[in-house]
Amino acid sequence: MYFTGPVLGVVYLLHFDAPYKHARHYTGWTEDLLDRLDHHANGKGARLMNVIWAARIGFILVRTCEGTRRTERAIKNAGGAVRYCPLCTPRPWNGHWGPLPADLVPRHYPCQPAAGPRWILLPATAQAAIAVHADGGTP
Image (cartoon, rainbow, N blue to C red; front, side, top):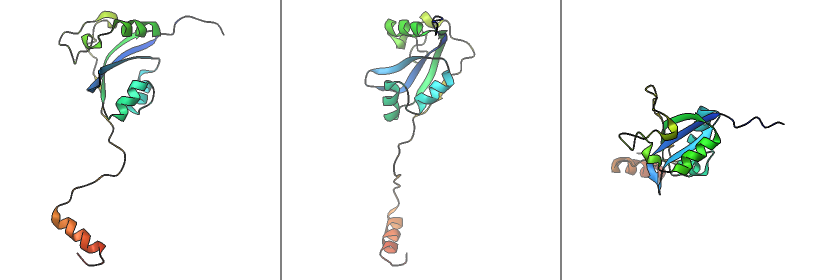
């Protein structure tokens, strides 16, 4: 196998619906953006995104640019994702990202509902009817 150089893909910035400890953003790189976002939305992939999913925190895709893993690393090393996030800053910096496209529609991935039994609080009359029926009586 011959090395052909860096692979061109998409660098993306995600904004979390709520902060998780100190983290409010995630920067990643992929060759298939929609597939990668679906992985993140299902708690798979990067460790931070797994933790965000388990904490039931949603996220929004806010920035994208064409680049390599080296571009992603340069963006992460620069730090301060909040400066580049259009949801956190009224006039976000561009830096490696380039200008925001006018047609970029933020894609929102809401948090997943908690797994497990669902409990419903019933009025006292309904609770009494269930209790009578469980004891063998009629409601």
